[in-house]
Image (cartoon, rainbow, N blue to C red; front, side, top):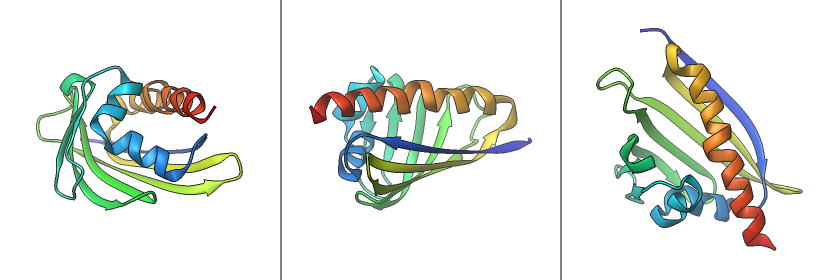
Length: 133
């Protein structure tokens, strides 16, 4: 199977801590995705998001700095996982997020790329902007 790497650089309002918590806290994650999320906040812990559509396991956690997870969508080939890496760094207008996803099945890469923007970065930005005011 051919795979692709997705990279995205985003600046989100809020602190690295705010973004880390949105990603790793089940209730906060569900607040911006509008789907149930169950996230075990430890290395080796499993997670599901979007009512079970996406599943995976956390490989590395450096609070407020870095998250590395195995990640898959339910329609991907059975047993295939990509790896996402999220780096968080303070920026003048919030937090610089460097996002990389490796081993994304090529046939899904275009939709996945758009999906991160539409279902993660845009709603996260709205939630963070509202909570900062």
